[in-house]
Image 1 (cartoon, rainbow, N blue to C red):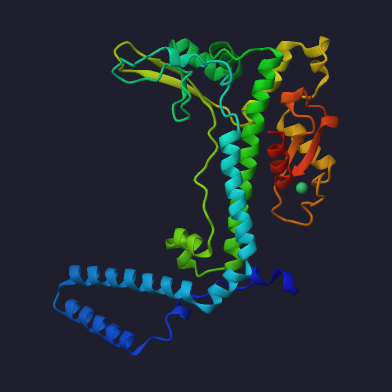
Image 2 (image 1 turned 60 degrees about the horizontal axis):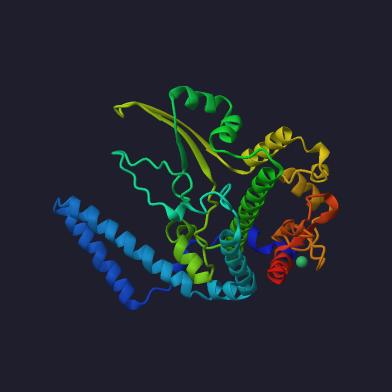
Length: 351
Ligand SMILES: [Zn+2]
């Protein structure tokens, strides 16, 4: 056994290890509590005995938790992984940046830009959201339609998505879906990376099981890990039929996650017939291409040369050397693997 995999080989600190040493008043309290329990049980007041027993359990559990966080073992390990925690929190901030700067809606760039000129109110009793241009991620884009359309959308989701939500089968339409796909996958990967870092921090501290089960939030807080509340705001498209009386209804929901977005990109590009244009020579910016670029670059940042082989939790991203906004194409020559730090400082310079 080598020193490098020391922590995970050991069993977590047993909870009873935290019980002792008990101060004298602790013994007195324990004895008092125990005699009270026996008294309650003997006098047949078992509901009170159960209540008292449960109260004592919660109190002891709480005290053990405080003891663990004050223990030398915990404090030493916490000190040891301080830099790991600091980096985790940096990635957490990066997740917020991606969430704020990314595109998580289709056509948000042009449609709805004049929506502020009109006032609309929803007068339906059921308060259905009909206005799909409202930039509210919590509200899905709903298309109210006949039952037949709901069923067709189930059978051929992409076709109906393109048709009823006005997704343009043009080069710029494909580019827009690709932009959405890049934002979604970038955020997905950053969040996954954050979770992996949290799991590894937990593993290296290896706390007693009851801490993870009952006090996980307190544990993360004590260690200094800032948890991110962000999840991926996948655009959601809904085809919904509600009968006139509102008594029966059916709906088909399509979530634009990475597989759906990639399928949509292929479908749109088939329709566009790129062949004649210069842009048509390019590859489609899908998860497959991004993975290919990372493989090609040996999971190594092309700026600072840090690699996945050196850092287990390195977050790598695929970058356009010449940005799309400056006419850069999604061709292999214009794509490179960057670590998140280099990609972040590069995009800060471009802005
Ligand atoms: Zn780098």
